[in-house]
Image 1 (cartoon, chains in turn orange, cyan, brown, blue):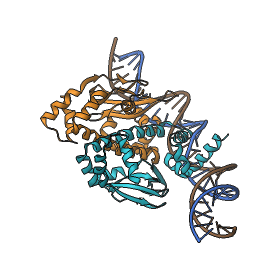
Image 2 (spheres, protein in one colour):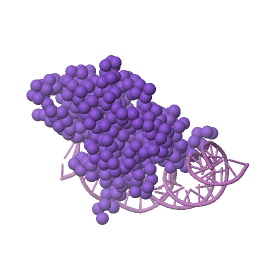
Image 3 (cartoon, chains in turn blue, brown, green, red):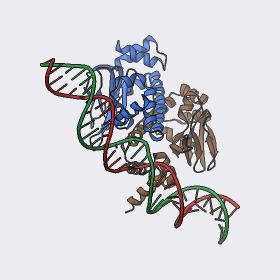
Length: 192
Length: 192
DNA sequence: TTTTTTTATTGCTACAGGTCAAGTGTGGCC
DNA sequence: GGCCACACTTGACCTGTAGCAATAAAAAAA
């Protein structure tokens, strides 16, 4: 069941009892997303955090030239949202849509706040989750400033071997801030 | 007093009583850093989180070519550490040193863990702190991928007007992933 | 103050990676 | 099977920004 994925994921960070489980689950609503379907569009306020139980989604913004910049992929076990918009309840600039058919578990801002207040373990869970996310983002930031195109691609392919296979390379390019042609040339060089 | 800066900062996110204050403070140790003095060097395990009560520090890594890449500045009210190294207790790749004479309040990993367990308000404080940091880092990441050199510089100058004044432009360049000459040319263009 | 060190400016040149365009798969689907 | 839509490849060219070097200016040290 899709809720198991979530509970397992939380359990990895904070031990949960059966009682905890049944306390937590009512805060979440399941949602199915079909390939290409939008979860969020630019300008809207992001009202939910979404846990990806199955599938693959992407979050991206569109610049003045109309070019998509993917800032985040979400596959099994990842959370996805326009976090800035969610946290501050302001209109965001991110779009989120599904790359594959996707199963989500969503929690609204009100439920999120209540969950954190009522269940200290969940406050702890999110503190640890964010702690780890920060470490990951730091690394990505350093890579985006320090690394060459080739290093960026290889680093990504290394860190997310499963996901790379499921993604067309133009999406990888967008995520890494490279042109699709550049990825093509890098792959060619690698295949030597 | 330097501890006031910290308590005020925490208080902005979670209300504290006088009793809370005196419960929290013993977990921290003050430390003075003189200009150019190192707080942490590459390869070491980062054992403390440091709150900057006064002054200015920078965190940076050094690439194979010996070039410094600044990933973070810390001035009054900011936390600084090699977070990845701190969280996972592994050797880090960041150096931290003082740009100005600096007053820190430091907390060790053991004290940090204990503080979080014993004082739920502090668990909450750090969850909120990390939540906000994530939003900031997301923005920075998008900027580093989407923006031109000029947009990066102007965005930074806009977001941190106070800090820009205190920084030589080669450090700003390093932070933004640009050459110092590029900053110089941008400033010249702006001055038209 | 004078000296030394650090930082900033500016012109010239080089190159990584972007852009454009044309051509080549390749898989779904009527 | 043939058509359409995408994704990928490859070459030719362009451009923003880096790198270098020499000089000037400013800040720190003595």
